[in-house]
Length: 247
Image 1 (cartoon, one colour):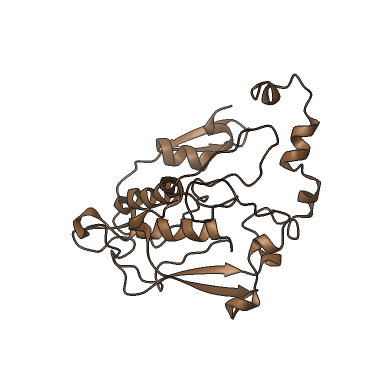
Image 2 (image 1 turned 60 degrees about the vertical axis):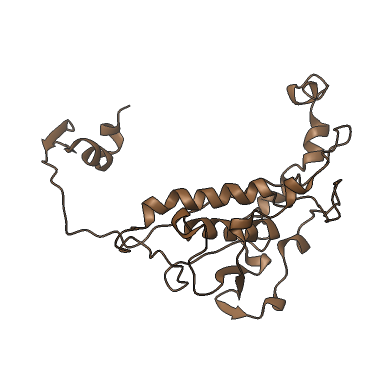
């Protein structure tokens, strides 16, 4: 089946061919000359991304545990910037102490991991590599969203919370990922990687019972039937590739 058959609008956009059905049901083409237009303006963009690399959320028995070093967990310096959390319950802005992090509502247990440093390393923690990944993502998107020369891109070169809306789940690793992304987006080599902002990054978080951005069984009850890592592994037969790979 071709794009023409089921997606005439997509076909028009891609080929300039407007496709429609005749009275007898046959397909008919009408070529439309595509001319550049200067009367259209992009007014917004939505960017979704997952958090960066993290330590494991669960440990599997029989699998050797990684020992983390300072290099693994030390914060990536260019991403350091203050953040201000905007807490919401429904549509109401509330004090941050009125809502709780997602970790307090789900069954994830925070376990201490092995490390060679005095700093605490736990399961589900964003790593230095994860911070750098999101910083680099923000940096790569600069060319799509900003105009360095005239400052007349989709967003200005300096962070402005009235123009840039940031939303995150209320987890340390996702908040750190959002901060790292914004730090990369609003800095450049020409400024010595210094963040261009007049204040902290504002990040909105929601009360977890109403959180729809992650696997929340309160919002999506079917998730109650999903396997945990441990139960899924236990359900596999001994000859399964995932089990054989560990031998």
